[in-house]
Amino acid sequence: MVQSVGVTDARERIILAAERLIAERGQAVALRDIAAAAEQRNNSAIQYHFGSRDGLILAVVEHRLATLEVRRLELLAEQAGAGATGVHELLEALVIPMLELGDRLGINHYGRFLEQIHTHPAVTDAANLESARRTSVRVIMRQLDRELAELPKPLRRRRLRALPTVLFALLADHERAVEAGRVSAGDVTAWGEIVDMLAGVLTAPVAVRQPSAVD
Image 1 (cartoon, rainbow, N blue to C red):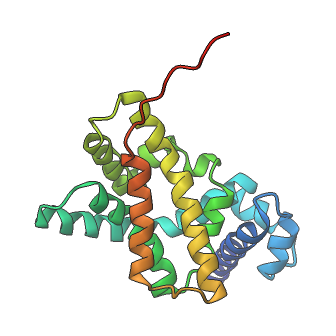
Image 2: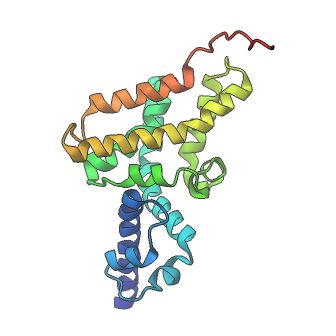
Image 3: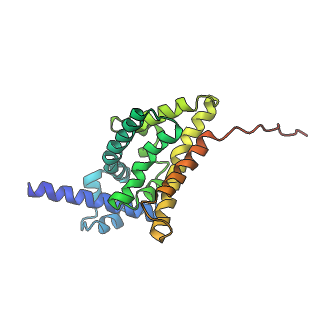
């Protein structure tokens, strides 16, 4: 039992170290640096616990999912009960739990971590929409798709695919602002501005453009 607890502690320390160092240096940060930051003397500790760099990145994402999933489903249920399920409300259910990580739990590197790995398979459409552990994201994305039904389908798909990239960048900027003391982690006005910007990305009117002149 003592050994099991020790293994769990070592694994979690590696996950937390990876989240912070990838946020600060990018996903190519040396694994030996992550092991050292997690106080692991054996440089093969990461391979032992996670198999590879990709396995470690996925583990960081999965480590945060349980908290996010519970909170998102809670917000979706509250919104459904209130009859409020528009674009803004759906985005709030997606985003607010991520902002609460910093405000309520003091987790202040996850947005920057996501910004660094935004093209990684751990956070692709397939991962978000197929995993049984990401039911809330699947529900939110499908409902957003329905809310944007007036947009041409190819444009709607492009905007929804761009949403995570924009979201991660805004979350990372918020974390940097909190770290610099420009805003508090729990500033709900700042949270609302993030949701507003994301809603703007999804619902911006389509400009009528003249075809390019051909010589």
